[in-house]
Length: 286
Image (spheres, one colour):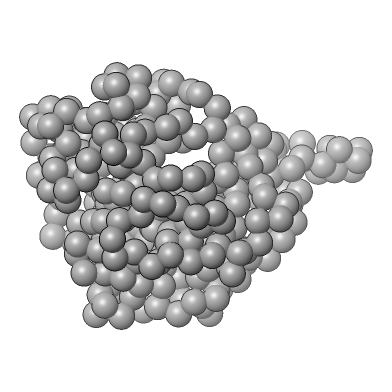
């Protein structure tokens, strides 16, 4: 069944680093078809990746970024929703999602809880007729839409600013407003959250545990279960930690060090670069 689903991703920012190469190649090595979208040529994608023009899914005009970090997260959120609405049998994967085993689903739903409260869209499959997907697309048509999932006080604050003629853009709202927070809200609202896998399905290392993936000699096997499909590397924070503490290269006996060796990835040939504003890994939420 895995061959019936393709994995699609978007890369913004020139050449890939070894971390993205590792994640993309993990799908290819698992036998899954991968389609990588971009707005400009990428000269170092792993062999076996199908390249595609991202403008076919969503124009880069009016490109949206998060105000605090300059991250393209808003555009990426919007891109994945349009991608899923336009394509059958497609599962979205961030370029920091490592494939443990081929992605497959009997009903088109493919996502998991990342905590007791939230569902993450770092890996996301939704059928084209998903009610939640339709509501996500509708909500994100308005860059100044007021989210109802941050409580009454915040909603009233945004309503007052809108009434005063100074509406708050999504890029100035909390991180994740169009991403995991919106996704969780609409999946719960429509009842589609019942399809979510447990945390270990896609996020076997929780956000607070991400440093363990770089710890030499750490026994990571207890995190991986029979129904674990992917490991999320928390890319922006992982890049920062690697650059700040390891000169950009994982220790050979760490999990990521073992994985780059397993898949034949050379960190020196595709070094890490920071994306967005330089920001150390302080433990603050991505």
